[in-house]
Image (cartoon, rainbow, N blue to C red; front, top):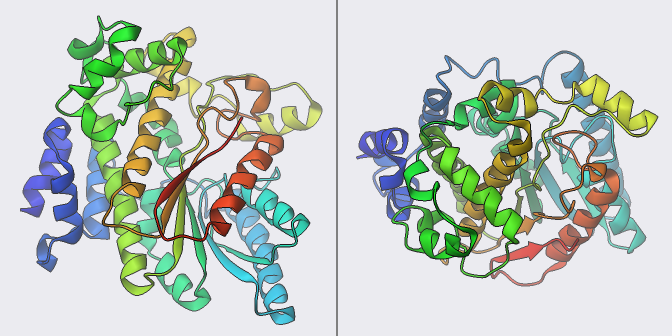
Length: 386
């Protein structure tokens, strides 16, 4: 059963159902239930990789050193606060550079600062690493023993960005001439988009597009994305859903009352631009701006003027996957921060292709605090206001 479903995710993702996903996550037969080794294998097969040993630099060289130094500082502050007052709300952080960026004031910096300004007592323990891959988090499995030790009130999860674009892999997710649903969408008009998706036998399972919340330009972007995104992209989306559900299940099986908060980024802008501002220029130069998105999309043959349409579609659908998890009525204490649109599609609000500026992180942090303070186990999506 498990082998058949995993092969179907890879070979025919449009024929996968949520019942299939639930079977893989919750099958009473342990041998038919998905595990970290299965998830690693399916991820590697999507990208034709040999192993996960070379996935990213989060733990290596200068990046690894900076990550460890930053976390050591943050975690020293965590224990210091608890020594002074054990009544601090304990928050465990796992994820990528939106939570742990060595060069800018990231999301966790802003949450910590705003909580202090609001006289809220937060003690934040971080295992996040800039450049981290979600598949590495589940493969290493460090989060469970750390959670057992920390016993937090809240867990913040951020991941998948590096899995999608690391090593220019975004080029694998695009097929200009033969996108997986090209025939379904290449002649669709903006005013037809909702009806086409809602009647689509596969996409209506992963995209909740009932409400008219997209502008005409966004509809055009999504239509274009749906014509060129590859079969591998949809296999990857199911894989991410499995990864997040796997992590949530593992945590809640042991700690059912912990609040878990996910996030899905905003729509990035492929660009080689370095400025304006000397600090932004230096950060972009050091991070080699353009190599995550623009290089990969150039390799895939996507015209520069169309590249933002692709990244819009990627992040739109990825967020929809996470929203669907939150809206699963079998779960509780699971929440999502929806940051889509917070940068208003303007490059001036980004430091580089992957990271928004601190003033944007500040906006998102306000929503995080609302969610952290939300006193109900009912799953909810918290939308960040522009």
